[in-house]
Length: 297
Image (cartoon, rainbow, N blue to C red):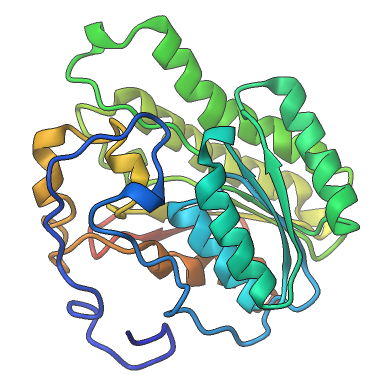
């Protein structure tokens, strides 16, 4: 498997997948996903761009968050991993990969829908890492529903609680610890621009994240803190099989992109590394799209 620094054809760097119809209870595990994902264990090569950084990542046990955690460790960062308690199996694996790089992995399970936990999460990350200078708000909830009438109040409120309310609470708490040069990177989605009819609540939160990112970036720029976002396209993760997509759509997942395939989590990691590293020192309020060629505004 070629690493991210090797000259390769993006169409064939990773194989086109045809996932079978499958279901996992929310939130889903990478360990049980068919086919499995590439989170960078063998395919991400670090170059020291985040040496000495201390990062808190939410949704860090699987999928995109796991790939970013591995990449950050390979780039020299210590990482605090947040995830749901049900995802302990995946989180332990990612922690092992991080520690094998000689970096610290702090495990912080808990539910981001709980406002009090969001505040404790930041405090515990600061204590475990000895400080904090990078935050990646990645955790998300996505449940596909055919019609608006089928979205009950609980689903609507839970999606907003995890995807945007928690982001606000964690960022607010983190600002007390972030020094000049620190960064916040939020995960939005192509759904913010091209909402699927089955993902009205999810897409709405992602549009909110774009605006939150741009507004906060301007507010804290003078403090030397940069805020940006990454907008993934169709990336193969456990989110898709734990009701994130209609089951009948899974075999064709990602094939409508110009590249003709779904993305792998490790293909997102360089975007987060770039926005966290000093290489992007003049980039603020940007949403970097990683969509396999599907256009965004």
